[in-house]
Amino acid sequence: MEGIGGDRAAVASHLPQWGHDTWRMYQYYLDKTTPHTTYRWIGTLVIAAIYCL
Image (cartoon, rainbow, N blue to C red; front, top):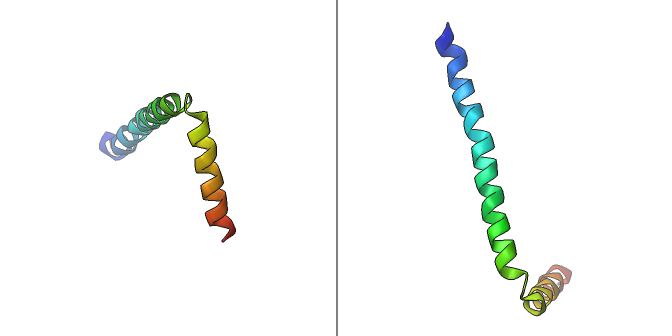
C-alpha cells in the first residue's frame, strides 16, 4: 500500500524545487536587465503599441 502514495509524494517534492529553480531563473534575468531601464521602457512601449493594434 505504500507504493500508491509514494508516487504522489515524489511528484509533490519536485514541485517546490521546480518553483524555486524557475524563480531563480526569473530573478537572474531581472537582475541582468535592471540597469538597462531605457531599453525596458522602450520594450514596454513597443509591446503596448502592438497590443493596441
